[in-house]
Length: 260
Ligand code: COA
Image (cartoon, rainbow, N blue to C red; front, side):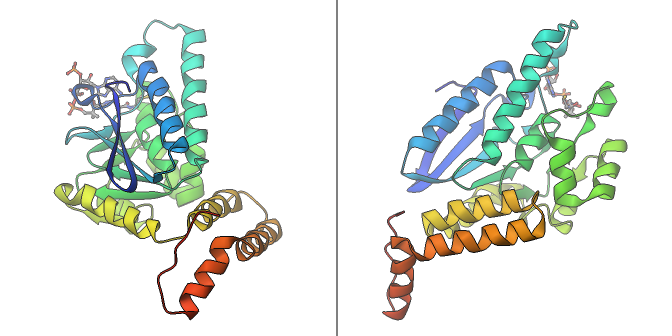
């Protein structure tokens, strides 16, 4: 594992991926994008990982964006390759088969915020500052930020954040419903872990399917999304875990889910 991306298993079922370049506010370099993909490979194939928490090292940032140093010199081909790699990573993270939680302390700007937006749950500290300030560089976001934010917050809140290069405070992200929890910075990991533990009680297949329902439903027409929802339920009802959940409830015991 690269030193700029760390992957740990603090407790059964939960992995924590840390963006680890604190001296540069965890700004995302080429090397980090590759290491991030490798960490996702590991977390995806490890059956003991059921929930993935993402965070930034240090107390100043989740990630302050793409590594602007790598943008210098008008190397257009390289710039585009980097952008495509970032987009591939974000698309994969959004579709990751296990639920993801972004734990945000300090700056989550540009590409850092775009990663956060690909996670299923967002937990913020009061110190969080979230934004897409690329306009200040004469650029615009390119890793899905404009479109994912619009799907989360709607057109006008997104326009405000983009057009004023606003760094939204954690409190506001929580008020707007973007963040699932708001806490003091020292409680950030315990808050994220609490959400992850709640997910561990949900049957694994149901977790994956409901994650997919939320993601695909956001872009589908309502009749299509509703048909998809019922198809998922019928499939889960016929699954071993679906039957186990019903039996366990009626027998007044805890279910033993096998992910089947
Ligand atoms: N890319 C590369 N390096 C970055 C970076 C980025 N996106 N964001 C911060 N850094 C580096 C700084 O260059 C500095 O490095 P140095 O100590 O070697 O000079 C270090 O991280 C600390 O940042 P600094 O700017 O000194 O901290 P600050 O508290 O004064 O400002 C920010 C913090 C986040 C407001 C400021 O760093 C910033 O605006 N970063 C860029 C944000 C951005 O535009 N992101 C979108 C990128 S497309």
